[in-house]
Length: 430
Image (cartoon, rainbow, N blue to C red; front, top):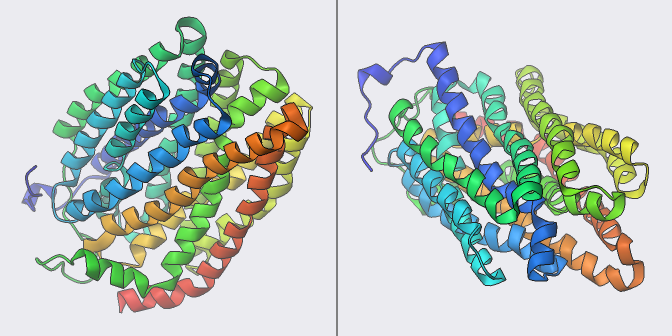
């Protein structure tokens, strides 16, 4: 990979080109979650085919994937703060999409687990470089919206992953679903490589970017001295603990407790979780930029308030047997519970120099994914297995309730992070 070139043709971008680049990176992020969520919608037929427990499903969709994802993410982000971020994103997309297609050929649990490790390895190079690029395309006062728009890729991927996975699996089997959703990402990676420009690093910074970029230890030391960053990371991690812990099992919950078919679940959740997730994610950035312009604390307090309001809706979803109302309440809960991601990324970038942004994102996602993606599904799966002898078909329902209760502590972390945020932002911009 070549080093980024600070050529004059990248010194200034039109509004149209910036939107194009943002859309391209958002599509990459959508592929990220299509390839990640496809396993979630396919859990029930895979479980039946391979004779797996809920704990094994939790390892497959959560901890094992997350461990590789976060460990590989930090060295890749370290290089992204020095190398060509666009090329890293394109190569990563090729790897994870190819490994998704290979997942369809797995003949055992261990082979499928190894394929998902490959997906995690590829996806580790997707978000941190893209976050850094977006922060160089857009000035600070527009980053909340831009990063929230990018983060909508999560729910575009959720929508398409649920929709395609459910329909294709019902018609052709779960193996073909992996192949069909994996291969298009390889083609798109080539398109991205030749159409998106590498932006100048630190373009919107007040201080000139130094030629000598910080070492890993210097970046970690900077983050260690920034308390609000850790409040943000833990808060986002606990929010995603619920999002992944319960979200990864929500299709199974609807199949087991609401007697829905896999195709019905896929189509329903494409609308209920996919569309509402996009709305909530973008709304978080929009409200953050609007109210945070006067008081930066609102970037974190708005997601905290939204999460608090979502709590009673979430409990109704898990405890009621009225399927139509459950799906309506789930839509409201998803909107309110997805306000956090864009503002948390934007604030983590505001707390560090431009030369540390990719690595700051990687550390943020290390914490977020180890707590959320790593522990969330595994915890829910283990609790479901533990409760099964006593509660039978309702074991997953009550396991998800316990996960939701634990996740409430993330709201407190976001509130405390907001209180500390003005001090740390001032120190970084001084």
